Amino acid sequence: MLAIAPLPFAAAAIAMTAVALAFVVPSLWRRRSPRGATVQAANLEVQRSRLAELDRERAIGVLRDDEYAVAVAEVQRSALREAGEACPPTPSSARLAAAIVAVALPLASIVLYERFGEPTALESRAPAVESASAPFVAHLARQPDDARAWVLLGRTEADAGRYLDAVNAYEKAIALSPKIARDAGVWAELADALGMAAGGRLAGRPRELVERALALDPAHPRVLEMAGSAAYEAREFGTAARYWRQLAQRITDPEARAELDAAIARADRLARTAIPLRAEAAARP
Image 1 (cartoon, rainbow, N blue to C red):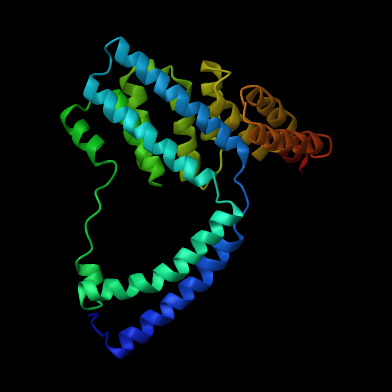
Image 2 (image 1 turned 120 degrees about the vertical axis):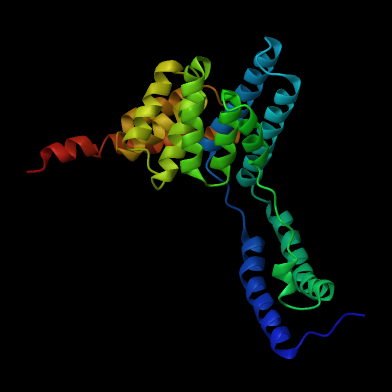
């Protein structure tokens, strides 16, 4: 038999559940819009590149089997996370999700109260969630010169939104390993983390890092995507279109290619009418 909650707590719980349903259910019911294809396509190519690189490092003995397994698991987790963010539900699946939430959320509230017995127990008995970066931190405490582990830690910290920690990890990896210092993808990841730490902007040092990555690998998908984004941010629309055209040659998914083509067309259109920021600044008194 379910325990009966004290009236003030029960009233508050009912009110909060109603508010949550009012926001969540309509959002799920209507949700249709896909995410931009440029980042999706670049991320897919990056994941493939990472796995291929890990296979090479294992084959030549750079990575032990246990290190290889940890690294592959992290790439797979990252790919699944990005795929989940990039693929919104179809209208039918969204409506099914809305119906499930509408039924499950109130029921979960009752079950949770029965389970914990008092409102404050929800906080006091909540299980501790182990940080995804913990295995890499523990490993690096034992082997601080493992540059590949620093890269994996950087990716984990970036995924968690701890961008300055990610920047620190990437910089250590680059300083430790000449091979990683020649990896355009790692430079792009460092630039991305630094840009996110600066509020999502690529101007300044992040763009300098992207240009360094371009010098290392002018055909790297993520580098091309970021180079185009940095140029677009600077209102250098013709340059952005040029980088994105190079990226488009590497995209095979028809939907992603169509969306990237639309971005290229928009950049081309703006290139014919807009004044670049650098020229605009030079023209000011």
